[in-house]
Structure formats: structure tokens, C-alpha cells
Length: 176
Ligand SMILES: CC(C)(COP(=O)(O)OP(=O)(O)OC[C@H]1O[C@@H](n2cnc3c(N)ncnc32)[C@H](O)[C@@H]1OP(=O)(O)O)[C@@H](O)C(=O)NCCC(=O)NCCS
Image (cartoon, rainbow, N blue to C red; front, side, top):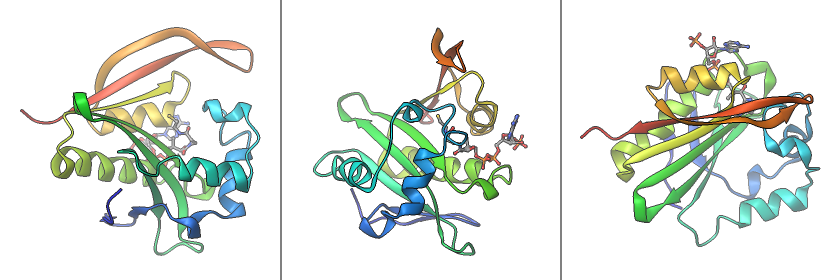
């Protein structure tokens, strides 16, 4: 993990550190409504499990970023993780904008665009991938608005409120 800080108009992405390990962050993960379209909804999270997740990035090519909003209090408002496949030039990205009061104001798209731009144009990733449940409309819109294209689908893969739900994959390629 590099010491990079990525900045956009309202946000910055900083490498996740122990100062981001707060009860507020643990509470995001245990919020059933917030996590309703994530497989994390099946687990109970604690400081210990979050510390273990953070430490799992040590000595790997993967990256764990904190989303900070300098004008917000507290400024840590979400996280992004990037899982790299160096052999194939791939990066799989996921996002959690934990502060629900910020939803629907373009912050998710702003953070997503920032990491995609960094991965393609600075890190030299060839293909960014991401997946989301078909019912996660805001995530699908973020993928669409950031220029991602269809990259497959697993039909009726997850159960959301007992209802079979597909997972949709999207991809963004580096310009050739
Ligand atoms: C998914 C998530 C990142 C979206 O963040 P956000 O900041 O609310 O998203 P934005 O405000 O950037 O909105 C993105 C687009 O979705 C649209 N949108 C938001 N809510 C919507 C809804 N319920 N239905 C349809 N579109 C919606 C917005 O209008 C916007 O589109 P536009 O730019 O064309 O207007 C956030 O809700 C989140 O972290 N959720 C929990 C974790 C999660 O589901 N992560 C993704 C798992 S893969």
C-alpha cells in the first residue's frame, strides 16, 4: 500500500490506518439496512473483526482506503477496498459509504471515479471489475455513470429478503 492521498472536489481517499478503526465504522457494518445488498449482512462485526480485516491487507498488493470528507465531522465517512490480480492487470473494487446522511448526493460516484482514475491512469491497471446485486440501483448507476460496461451476470445468485437476486458484473478498461 502506498502513502498516496487522492483528492477530489469534496473528498479524499487516504490509506486506511488504525485511527479509522472506530466504533462508528463497526456500526456501519452491523447496520442491516445499510448493508442489505452486501454479503457482510450475514456476519456480526466487532473491533476485532475489523482489525483483522484491516491487517489482512498487510504485505499484499491489495489496498484498503478510507473515504474522508474534510467538511464532515467526523471526516471518515466510508471505505473502499481494491483487490489486485497483478498477473492479469486486474483490480476489483468495492465501496461502502457508511454515513447514510451523505447518500444520494453524488459522494459515492465521486469516490468511485477517484479510485478508478487512480487505478487506470497512475497504477496502470488494465481492467477494473466490480459486482453488485441487481437491486442495488444506486451502485448500478455509479457503475454506469463511471463508464463501466457489462461483464457478466450470475442469475438468481443471492437471496435478498428471501428473493433470488442476480449479481451483475461491470468492468472499466484502460484506454488502449
Ligand atoms: C452504493 C452507495 C456507494 C451509493 O452511494 P451514494 O453516494 O448514495 O450514491 P450517489 O449519490 O453517487 O448516487 C449515484 C447514482 O445513483 C442514483 N440513485 C441513488 N439512489 C437511488 C435509488 N434508490 N434508485 C435509483 N437510483 C438511485 C443517484 O441519483 C445517482 O445517479 P445520478 O448521478 O444519475 O443522479 C452507498 O449507498 C453505499 O455505500 N451503500 C452501502 C454499501 C453498498 O451497497 N455498496 C456497494 C456494494 S457492491
